[in-house]
Every structure is written in structure tokens, then in C-alpha cells.
Amino acid sequence: MTVLVVGIPEGVELEVLRSRIQRNPHFQVISHARTPDVALAHARVLLPDITVLTLSGSFRDDPAAFGVFRGVRALDPPSGVVLRTRADATPVDLDVVTVDGAVHLVRAGDEEGLMRALRTIGLRRATCDPDEMP
Image (cartoon, rainbow, N blue to C red):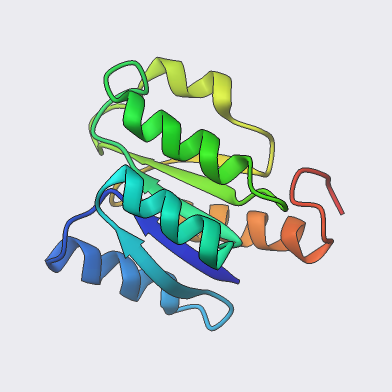
């Protein structure tokens, strides 16, 4: 499964996240983008199976992040999404965008939660319809 990482600048955090994802041989980070416009450009060209979108707050606080979310979900086929939130809080408005199995909320630092979300999306993607259960 191909993975696009969005919202993390170059540096240690990005490398740690990339390493965690690629520890499982079924997942390959194909690109990363810090800004929404670059993220959407990469997504349109690469059609990632999964997008890991790191949020600084809620979608209300960051409409550009919501634009990335809508953009990757509008791809054909839609990218599964892991919304990474701050470790100390999960914004309330994110509950309305979760789709059972296709969009997941994971707190930063929750490595097991991240891998569980990636595996769940990967299983759906393997059925050729990421929004339907196998």
C-alpha cells in the first residue's frame, strides 16, 4: 500500500513517522508534503492508497487541512485517511468525518493505533473499494 504523509515538516518527526509506517513491509511512504497545495498535487499524481494527515487542531481551525482531506477523499478511488491529532486532545469536529474503516483518528505517538488504522484501510483497499467492508 502506498502512503502519502501530509502536515509534517522535514526533520526528526517525519523520519520517525516514515520509519514506523515502513516497518511493516506492506506500506511504503511514496511522498510527503508540508503544505496543502503540494499535498493535493502529489495526491492527484500519485493516487496514494492511504494519506496520513497530521493536524495541529480541528478542521474549523485549519480549513486548508480540511481541503486536503476532501481532496484525497475525492480521488478515484478515494484515499483512505489517517487523521493524526495532537497527543493531548482529539478535536470534537473530527468525529463527523470518520468513515468506519476508511477514515481513522489516531493520536500522535500512538504507534499501535497508527498501524491498526493502516492495516484496516489496507484490507479495505485490497477489496478494490476502500469504503466498503470486504
